Length: 262
Image (cartoon, rainbow, N blue to C red):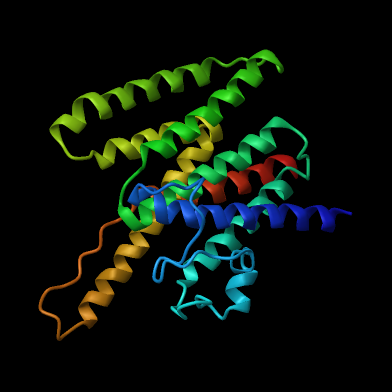
């Protein structure tokens, strides 16, 4: 019975992942993500249902567009796969206690991190639409805790107040002075993480993210040293939100496992 339930959650996950690939591609280009039918970005041919089955269409089509035979980037397949695995592992971390608001809000939270991380990886930007989405998810969870669970929500209110201040600073002051303030945007993301995943989990997230970025920097330095014939060395911009989002999803799942299975 559990295997069937996990399979069902995995299918939901890869379906979400398919939407994430669309959102990551279209949002930075200011394209509609809800009403416009999926199409091949190379030949613009509208895709049929059989072209859009998460993961399986990529496998059956050999990683190519059915119509123009252009290769489809493998990252889209892996986003769908990793989303499915993240959903399953999150359910496992809660001992399959999935019929509650924390599970639903947790999946929505993970979904937001996937989109923010994916766009940051490609565009080096923390989209404010993603921040607004996560804020709404957090607010729904806080209202539930306060009204239904009768829980103490003072810490949530404090972080919401900090979030409001940071967003006001970003939109009113810094965007007038600068085109974007990437550092402040990442602080906003960290505040959202503090609100949903608590302080210990967020501190671990930051530590693991910086370790991953340090390893990536070392790898880039080694690669640049090996390029003897290239005069101008390649400079890579570090996508901080990508590492924070990825580390936070992993840390959230691991800490849940430690809490529920101890």
